[in-house]
Length: 99
Image (cartoon, rainbow, N blue to C red):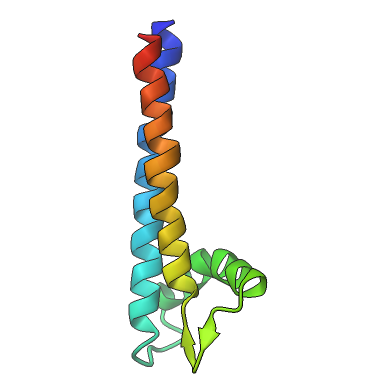
């Protein structure tokens, strides 16, 4: 059972890292929206390609634009925190009980 426990623990750590990276991508994208960056900059294009699928899905499902302010990055960040608290910790707890 220790092999399955180690697998779940490793999976939880990788998932936590990926969620942390995506959190920072969404945060930088939201901060860049306050200035007018060059849309042809490769970094800006990467940020848009990496975050647009999730942000556009949230915008379609929930009307999150109020008075010209877009709250979809905030909802995505809250979703990331929820996944880190619920899913990652649950995987770690299951891995610890299997040891």
